[in-house]
Length: 377
Image 1 (spheres, rainbow, N blue to C red):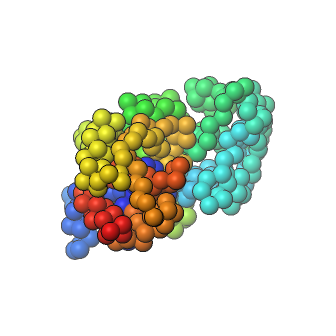
Image 2: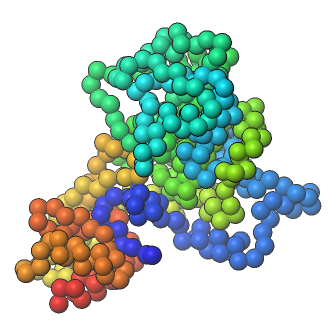
Image 3: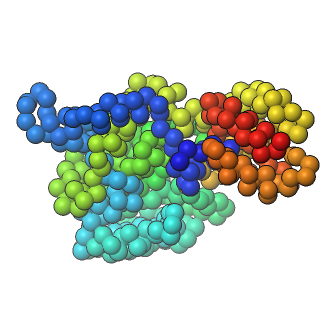
């Protein structure tokens, strides 16, 4: 069901995370309402591989040797661990044993993969020598996990990526980095720091990386695995890959999104449009909307968040509208907006209903205005 997101949380997990590009849906409609070359090589006239459609684009975008796609990043981590470390040990920092949404934890995923956890270091400090001391005849993989949904500050230490890669090469042990949210374009101009770029990990020499498709990438739910051909092809041959692979709908949309990055057309990706929106632009929209609502609406400066377990310490300067109607409590107004058509999900702050314009599509403003007038008239 369509919803107006006025919460200011760009990647709202409960609201479906990344909205998809309109032209991606047009492409999806074209390839899904008839037959397509999903697993057919048009040049050779014989059976092909379904992920070749995104594989080629990922190779150009990330500079990797090979890539495959599964249905989410948890599946990607499970598949990599099962393929490269089943029956052996995986060394990981104690401070990187994260829990993602819905109580899924790295140690539990590792146990399901058939690999054994070998934790090193302390919660806040892990050095490269901690990894090296833990290596033994049972070691199969060195794992590095990006803390997408939390930040550790203060007396902390983590080995630089280069040292981590060098250790793996020197001891002939493959390295795997779970990037979590996954950025394929530099997020710093958006005011987002501490989010690694996938291509950067590949250039640094990591053997295998994985990341989500429906977070900072702005695409459909997917788990992207990329890296050295030796390891990615081995992962592809795992029988679990077929159980976790994506369908033609996901491939179609993901292909479009990846090509948008490759062609420098990130403005076609709604998540990036929202993240790139300036405070001045949002202020203009908020003031205009407040004027249409009337004296019970006041424009105000706000802070938006990225959401989706990404960039937890990042607050984006934003603007919105505060609604305050006499005789209607903030909780009641929130309920009415939530039960309107289309429903609007808002914030409650200091006894007022807040509409954050960073996450409100311009095309939804008229419908939102009609609903406000209807439920307060």
